Amino acid sequence: MSNDNLGKKEFKKPEIAPDVWRDGEFIKWDDARVHVMAHVLHYGSSVFEGIRTYRTRRGPAVFRLREHMQRLLNSAKIYRMEHPWKLAQLCDATVELVRRSGLQQCYVRPIMFRTLDEERPAFGVNPFPNPMTCYIGAWDWGKYLGEEAIEHGVDVCVSSWNRLTPNSMPAMAKSGANYMNSQLIKMEALLNGFAEGIALDDRGYVSEGSGENIFLVTGDIVLTPPLSSSILPGITRDSVIQICEELGITVKERTIQRAALYVADELFFSGTAAEITPIRSVDRITVGQGGRGPITEKIQKRFFEITKGERPAPGNWLTYTNKANTSSPSDGKSFSTAALESETAAIIVKSA
Ligand SMILES: Cc1ncc(COP(=O)(O)O)c(C=O)c1O
Image (cartoon, rainbow, N blue to C red; front, side, top):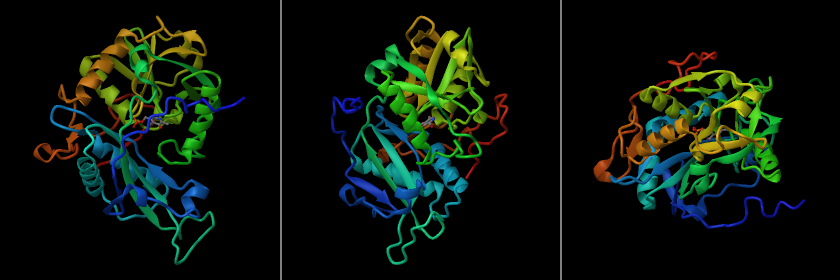
């Protein structure tokens, strides 16, 4: 079977920021290149982030910048990546990049990886001889699962691929290599006519989508898998949890069986790219009424009001990039699920 049409049709070149931040300076997009023998290309040694900048009345605003950059530093720490970059520097670089780009809304992609020292090349698996480098680029990216999906939801499947096991590849780290697993999940879903796949963890409990966390609504309670189900500690997930608390909706972290997906009243994905996307069917079984449910809609509405700067967030979530408006990245409410009855004791983001 040909894969030619999958993800390739309706190609529209995104608007791209002309500058890229590299190791403390701005370079041109065309100069942001690496050697083909860079360690990262062969052994997957990168960690990265995906951050959205929203259009607001006060100009572009980066959503939860500090939390994303802290997760980047955490991912690097897990992989013993020694580097000179500090939280404030990465946040400032992002603000400057967005400002220079002139884009009113964009997706920001910081990436740190092990490259090639051309004076003292090293080609083995051992990553230690390979120097670290860090880039931040940005482009305008529309709705990840399609414009329609936000309102009408997506049709998804449970993947035959399991999510990574905690003691093989830590899902807590947002590493490039983890996305080989995500690609298997995504390709299988697309080839079978679904928009996305949901992976189970190695015990058979619901984990997450290839690039999204998942929430289940049963009655008036919202459930989401805990970190021990091999999930990425999503920043949108944390935002949903805080929004639920603000809206007076009970939200709990619980291990979730596959069958619970089929009988849920509502399901939705959360993620920087996917934002809050309802799920209307799983394995061709209709979820609830087969569209966006009322609780999902309520949470989604609040989320978009916050990201557009129309309503105050539960914490200092927006970093405005226009000079007149510049605000420091969030040092407000910490990004932590400590308030939830998590079965995994994990402080996701410690203070810098
Ligand atoms: C595997 C995976 N899970 C969850 C998420 C959602 O995380 P966040 O809300 O921080 O974007 C992402 C997206 O980055 C992801 O790739």
